[in-house]
Amino acid sequence: MNKVERIAGLAELLSLPGVVEELELRSTLGLCARHGGGLERATEAVAREVAERTDASYYAVIQPEGSRHHLSSTLFDPGDSKRLAAFLDRSEIVVSVHGYGREDDFWAVLLGGTNRALAHHLAGYLRGILPEEYRVVDNVEAIPRPLRGLHPDNPVNRPANGGCHLYTSAAADEKRGEALGGRRIIKKKMGGGGGG
Image (tube, one colour):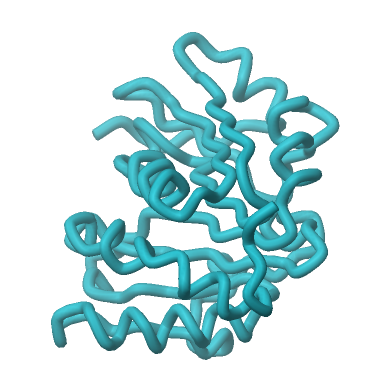
């Protein structure tokens, strides 16, 4: 596996060969995978499928196989991408799908972001459907600081109702789409909304 290289900005990332953005505008619920493709494999597929199943809007940045460029979430500036700006303008709440697979904590599913009510709700749902090997963490203090996703410049926190980061390991790939597939999870937290 190639070494992860830090990158300075979204415009630079989008200018790399083979890097693409995907955008589908639907409801005001947004699903995204900003580190998709070669960096956090299958996250864009999960976000896309969940968005299709729930009629949610969808945004992803997808790197080609072998490309491992990391842009800090706080540097995803909507001023550098009309597609990201359109996604954020449309979304009232966002769930961002991320890969997570630390050798010492492979079975963890972490729920960061500023919308703590949504994080707690998703955690309860996931605990009910994931096998017992999984450790679902929604206590933000128990999440490693770099993965808490609380900075106001993080795109997930920009919409009116903020959002939630879902970090999960490759071992959860099979269950990820199923776990988030029911629109009722999100709609309940939006007061019955999510359409429109």
